[in-house]
Structure formats: C-alpha cells, structure tokens
Length: 292
Ligand SMILES: NC(=O)c1ccc[n+]([C@@H]2O[C@H](COP(=O)([O-])OP(=O)(O)OC[C@H]3O[C@@H](n4cnc5c(N)ncnc54)[C@H](OP(=O)(O)O)[C@@H]3O)[C@@H](O)[C@H]2O)c1
Image (cartoon, rainbow, N blue to C red; front, side, top):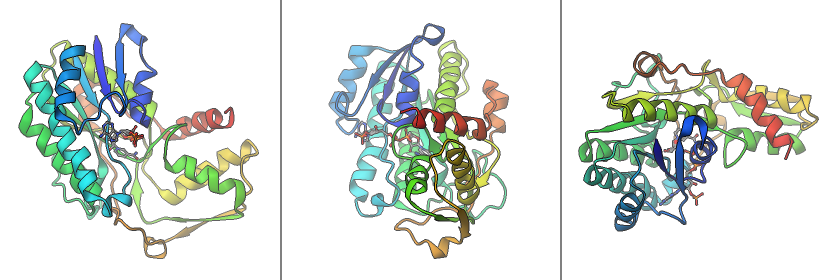
C-alpha cells in the first residue's frame, strides 16, 4: 500500500512517515516545501506523479490563537487547501483521510461528542477546520474525516513541550482546570491512520466522519500535573505546585470549548480501533524528549 501524506513535518505527519515500512506500507511524505496545499495545481501534479493508493491530509494551520489575527491564512490552508486535496483525489480516483479537530464543537454539551453532533466552532481555527470538512465532503465521496484532539508528540508545538519548558524554570504553574478534553499521542493517531487506510484500500466502504482520541478524558490542569510528575521523575522540573485556575483567569485570543471530549465508539465498531491511554504515551514521550 502506498500512502501520500501532506504536512509531513507536523506532529501527525512525521509520526506517519516514521511508520514507513511497517506492514510493507510505503509512505511518501511531503512537507510544506515539497507540497503547499494552498497551490491547487501543485496538489494535482503531486497526486498525478505519486499515484498513491490513499492520501492523508495532515497539513493544517494549527495556531489556534494566531488564527484570530490571520483568518485569511487559516481559511486558505484549512478550507481551501483541504478542498484542493479532495478535488485532486476525486479527479485521480483516490480516497482521502482528512484530519480535523475537536474544536469544531462549542463545548456546551456536558457529555462526550459524537460524530453526528452539530459543529458550532467558537473561533477562526475551528471554523476554518469545519469549513474544510464541508469542502472535503462536497468534493469527494470516498473520504474519511478523522477528528482528534489535544495532540502531543516529542516534537513540534504542543502542550507537553510547553509545560516542560515552563517546568524547567518556574516554581509554580497555574493551569486551567475547567476545559475538558482528551490528550492524544501523535503516534497513536498515525497507527490508527494506517489501520483505516489499509481497510479502505482493501475495499471497506466506511466513508464519513470518525473520532479518535486518547483516554481517559482530563483537564489541562490534570494533564499538566501528569507532565510535571513525569518530568520530576527525570530531574526535568523544579515546579513545586501546579495550581488550578479558571479559563477567565487565563484569557486567550481564541475562545476554547469547555468540553471537547470525543466519543470513540464509532471508530472502534467500524475499524476495530481502540483509543489507547495517553498516560503511558506521555511517559514515553517525555523520555524521548529527555533523551534528546
Ligand atoms: N495539534 C493539535 O492539538 C490538534 C488537535 C486536534 C486536531 N488536530 C488536527 O490534526 C492534524 C495534524 O495536526 P498536527 O498537530 O500534526 O499539526 P502541526 O504539527 O501544526 O503540523 C501541521 C503541518 O502542516 C504544515 N502546513 C501548514 N500549512 C501548510 C500548507 N499550506 N501546505 C502544506 N503544509 C502546510 C505545517 O508546516 P510548517 O511547520 O511549515 O508550518 C506543519 O508541518 C491537523 O488537521 C489538525 O487540525 C490537531
């Protein structure tokens, strides 16, 4: 199976490229310098040249706060870029797995979100991702939209790396405790993408939207506590206390959902993929960061 992945230098893209060779999967990874998805012609040419069995669109504009100040760029990448990828797939007769986000939801629901719950994004990033989903749906029947959340890995920009940076030179961390979600290791997402790719390429016609996220659900505060604990075990933290604060005590440019816990029953029932616990992956990730 030959898989083409865009955004190959991002957290998910790089994790997928790292799986090249597993179960004889050929992964062609194109980073932004190899393929800018906002260049429609380049996207068509890249697919024509590579002719993969399936495409994974892991390229995205992911700076949630900055998106409020540069909405044109966020929409160009997350909506228009996604549409170009889907149109190119449609023309070439290739299926597409497109990644999306828990931030398409407004967080007002008190239970986990299911795939058919109505999106109502609170900010530019979430809106651009939701419109990207709509563009993919309109352009291509043979698509899977995989929504995930709170992604972390040993590289790139993520909450774990930010907390580790703070933990090195602060005595106290103050972290919001009233936003609930599911941390998800990028390498688990990559493995899930491979399973889905294989089944779609082998003829399973399970198109549509799916949620994939780590378990159990937590808060940024409890996630930070776990990060500091793991960092302390390795002599990477001088933090003495992690204090819970409310969202109102930590205003950010973009509003975030209070609850973006994703229900993962559908992906398990359809593809047999069970979301793994994020706690073990966190330990692995911090060891990898500590090891350089
Ligand atoms: N990160 C999260 O917490 C999170 C949560 C939920 C869902 N998701 C979704 O999961 C997917 C993967 O996220 P991630 O965490 O891997 O993001 P990431 O680490 O920010 O990676 C995204 C990659 O896309 C690239 N990119 C940006 N604009 C591009 C363009 N015009 N053409 C080609 N590549 C472009 C970026 O390149 P540069 O490095 O050059 O900018 C970056 O390498 C995205 O769809 C995201 O919306 C992420």
